[in-house]
View (cartoon, rainbow, N blue to C red):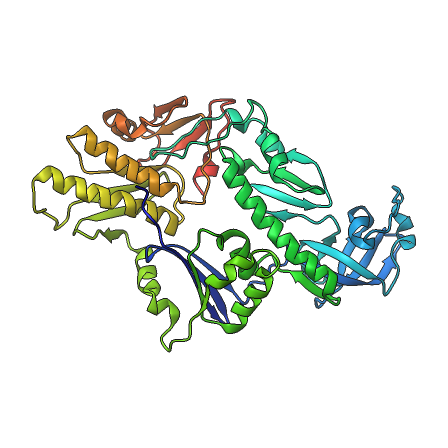
Length: 459
């Protein structure tokens, strides 16, 4: 029987910082933060007013409510957003911009593509898009396009020393099957499939698409009623992120300590997911909300290398430039039965905790997990299944490539002596020893073209 997971989102709203914590069965698994002084505007969508039109530059300056007017070039104008239902023909001559825009004209909707810098205002476009993790959502479009970097990813296999999720849907050899997305999307919506989508299931695509579609419905409401100049969508606003990516039917409770933020979220949900409103609670106790749910205490352990397990064992997490090494120890746990049962229990607890720490610390790259040796094959399989099960909850995707890895001879010998670490890797993988490379360093080459791609994994 599948274990029922209690999913909760705890929101702490402070004048200088907003924080979102995700709990599973009262344990912290993810944390997000937004500081007030983060003046990032790229991706924000505004309703604005034309201040000046310069035919010689083929551009216009738009007041969107910032300290400086923003710049909109003729080639970035989208008539569908500027003029609503009215059809306008645009030629290639940018000097004709004055026949389309004029001072004091209300611009329906524009999006920031470049932040203000020095004396220069923000750069705008009328070609609106909403980027997700796997898809880019394009209103008033219809095409389903595939990112150029995505074309050859479908044939790549999985690299990793811990198990990966297996997709339920399959992609064509050289390109993503568009059938799934045609089934999911609404008319007059375009989509770009991002490189990170490789291996996605139909459910994962649908979940992200629905989140982006909900966000767009909220923006459409603002387009209709908001008075310019005004920001109608803040890409960096955690409340949008919460509604789009986090708060779904899988969440049992959303608890917020700020009445205004709660009301804003409820207002946004009324038109798109009214059934979720009853799951929102206002926290009104005297003690800080993150203290009340034990979140502050758990956050303190994120930077500690040793994490203790319920039965007295522990895991030791060590990050190097080459890989993340995780060691499992019994610690003070001796068990009430025999030694084999003690080891199995420690490894089972460690499998869950390792998956949680990977999410909580946002660990990535090559990971080597050294579980305590077990004699019984049945026990090994159970521990492996626990690890697989909890890793599936991680919303982060993993890259899949065939590779050549050059390491210190001692590291190469370690892999040769522990072949089980790579038993789940079904792609072609070469490990080469080189005495010139330090033990905590490595080089990675693509087997497809022998390209050095070390920096992608060594950041």
